[in-house]
Length: 306
Image 1 (cartoon, rainbow, N blue to C red):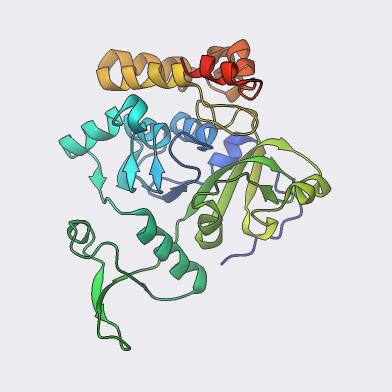
Image 2 (spheres, rainbow, N blue to C red):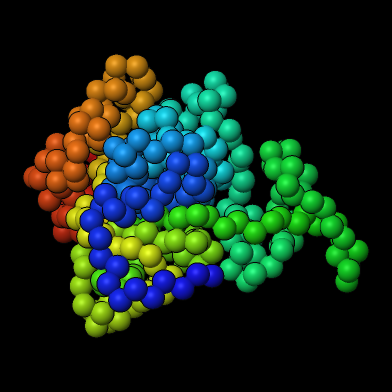
């Protein structure tokens, strides 16, 4: 694993996104509608990034938005959608049906094994979970091997070493130490396997405060840190704020409609909002503040998701 020992890694969002180049393999931290690196995703779209190979576990609006903006060439995920609440990811589904994005569906356990192979410096890891599935057809790089101890036939998967891992954290210091709240999803493994880790954080704080909260990802794994309040919106960053269900509804409807409706969403919240400050203004500061009240009572969080 690379060691990044710069004493001060604090950068602005534009420079942080600059670690991702056209055609890069990009690991997306978080999962589903929780702690996705949305500010970085929006900035990649603003900068016109193209040909990305995105990898992750189970994701939603981050992957769908990148696909909708034409930034993705290859998608290697176990799931892309909005769970039982808002259904399938519209732009991703359309791209899969039309063949405009190469879909290499995988599973969380297999991706984890591949990341561990990269982390441990191994040429492969054996897995069982994809035996007998069509996932083998989507991954011709996988091979069958025979266990030297039991004679069992297993699948050997190669290391997965992303060029850049994008992670959003509640807290971090300027050296790159990051604190994450559970669940970590694959973020720890992405950080250990990737060539570069670029993080946005809700707040840059002292090293002592990160240590008190608990260092989840140590500084030597991190290349750059940018302070971006509400950097996971419209997904959640618990315990700070809940996910913004009405905004996700707005996005999924626009993405499903495509055409001018999707273009209108992108213009309002991404390409037409040139900074995250402009994005927060477009969303509404009152709305963002409301999301922080989720823990006040059962009635409060139910009201947010109504």
